[in-house]
Each structure stands twice: as structure tokens, then as C-alpha cells.
Image 1 (cartoon, rainbow, N blue to C red):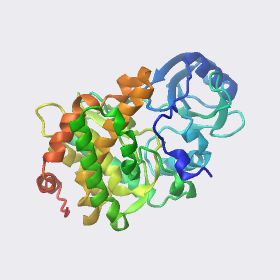
Image 2: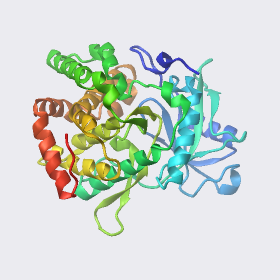
Image 3: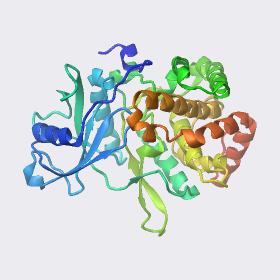
Image 4: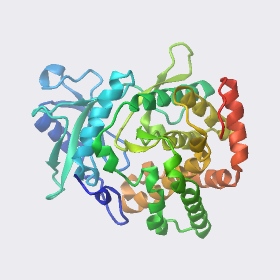
Length: 377
């Protein structure tokens, strides 16, 4: 098993594989005996993902639907820890059996759900390669955030975490990534990428608050296996069949950040991206309350967890801003994707940090009451 420190990004490390569409086609043919008819690269922070359609299901040794499949080449850092890949595959199977929709891994020619491969430009470094089913829909980006949609997303997230209560895997107990909220204190190593002194000062303040309020109270928080990255890019939605012009949640994507951690982190990450995606003129705190209500209706959290929810949301926002700036500095070709948070994130951080926790919790408590939910923060 890889050492815990081997799986956490350090400054100066470049981990995204160099793979183009032509090599993705070659990997698909070599590992799965499938011939591609259409290839489209999908956005990703550290990995490389390709949506691929094939000639026909008879040309493959695996069953691929007419919607195609997704070839995923994992980054070099996570490829060092194949035990976590096994854990992720078992978790995906577990929650799928509980009715949670998510892409499923497909076996290669060796009957395995993943393999370690050298790439044309990787030298001796090998990368984990996997093939997933493709679930039709769109990610939760660029649509109007309605209370009904947000409540549905929160509710499905709560159902997923309820399903995770009965799941465990030893690899997750030792698996940490820089995107894990437990690693927020490690962001001090990346602050040189924040050039604005006022922004850097605010980030440092949030990191201290997180340490004082959350880290020191870990023993009081509810713990288990979590998805770990319920961002808008990992939430799959489709047009609503009953409400024209609106959307409904379908499922969740990408369990690469799944680990054994604190459940308050799960909902905090989701709420962070709700705040970022809220339209101008709307109160993002109010909108987040509807997602929180959905989550708590399926997965109640006790007062010690809810009392640190605001600082956890703020810490995730800081994490996104800092790591986005860092990743753009080492992967400039991917900056449009990794800097999505920046344009709105800094003003939101100032606003959220300045807003008293009592005000935030009062607003959320009022929203919860609309759903006949009563929780103490």
C-alpha cells in the first residue's frame, strides 16, 4: 500500500497525463478491442477523460451502449495507489445496488476493471486506465438553480451517504488527496500562487479558523465513507419529464476523491458549489438551504457537525481558489477549466467570511422549517 504522503500533491508536482485523442483510440483498441467512431475529450482537473463512441457493440469484447463509454487515464499521483482504485470500484458497485446512478467500470480483455499502462510520452511512468459506461445527461453547470432541483440534489446526496454507512474498505482509511478537506491545512504550501496580499491574508485567516474550529473537534464529528467531491461538474442532471424547462438530478460522477472522512465535509462541498453557481440577484445562502434540507431529510447530522458547516464551506471555497490558481500555473493549457472558481470565488469568499455564522444558520434554519425539518446548528 502506498504511503499516505505519496498520495497528496506537493508544490511543483505535475501529475496530469499527456494523452491526445489518437492515443486514447489506441488504448481503447489495445485494452478493450473496441474501434472508435467518435472521440471527444472531456474536462478534468488532473486526469484525462474521453467520451468515445464505437462502431457497434459486436466490435468490442465489452458491452458498450449506443451512448458510448468514457476512457479515463488517471493522473500519475493517484496511479501510485491502485488499492484505492479497487476500493472505488467496489464502492460504485455498492451504491449502484442501492439505486444511486453513476457510471460503472467495464472489464478489459484481461477481465480486470483497470490496468497500469505506459503512455507514448510517459517514459517509465505508468498510469491507471479504466473504461466506464456513459450516462446521458449534462453536468450541473450553467443552469438555473431552482429550490426543487437543489433539494433533489441534496436528497440524492443524503441517500448516497446513507448507502455508504454500510460500506467500508481498508484502502480508504489510508487514502488522502490534496482535495480532501482534511488536507486544508496543507494549503499553506501553495500560497505563493496567490499574488494579491489581501487575498493571501484572507486565505490564511480561513485556514486558522478551520484549524481552530474543525481540526480540533474531529473526534466529535460523524465519520464514514464519502464521495468527497460533489462539485457541479460531478452532478449529472437531465430535463425534467414533469416540468418542462426544468431539470432533475440523475446521479453522481467521479469517485476519485472518495475516502473515509467526515460527513459534514460532503454536504459542505456541495453547498460551496451551490453558492458559486447561484445567479446574480439571488441570495446564495438561501439557495444552499434547499440543498441542505434535501440532504438532512435523508441523512441527519448532529449539532457538532452542523455547528462547523459554515467554516467547512468557506474552507472548500479557499481550497478551490488556491488549488485552481496553483494548477493553472503548472498546467496553463488547462487554465480555463481549473480557474472556473476564480471570477466569482474571491468576492464570494469575502462576503461569506464577513457574514456571521449566526446569520447563515438562521437563514438555513428558516429554510429547513419549510420542509418540516428542525435541526440545531
